[in-house]
Length: 170
Image (cartoon, rainbow, N blue to C red; front, side, top):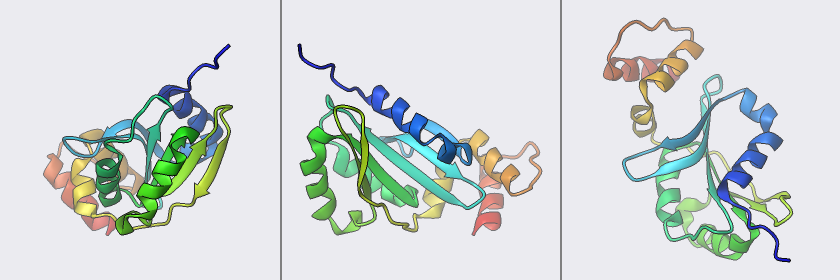
């Protein structure tokens, strides 16, 4: 009897469950838009340390056609970027990351068919383009960031909140 294929949501749920302590210290966003064409599967925003993590999930059923463009975008938005993928894609993902110098910061976590997670490549910290990232947050996320810095939020426009956050964080 063939085994059940592991889907994106299976990987996502198990990854979150196993890293619950990490996600408790962050603002967790499921499927966060990072521009008009890309949505990172998981984002973890640590406003206390001002570190933003992006996780792209690739299941057994996924293809990797868009991964290059996705990672190129995510490395401009997040300090730490990981691909979390089914082992079926290991060779292709390693080649993609290793053959593109601007992806030298991207980490890779392999997921086996029996749902074991192995960090094959550790992500390293990279400085994203903060303006691009911060302008992409919605009002609720901007509000969380301001509050984490002890700032009162009134009825302010998004551009005013962005300017306030830039002064607080940079």
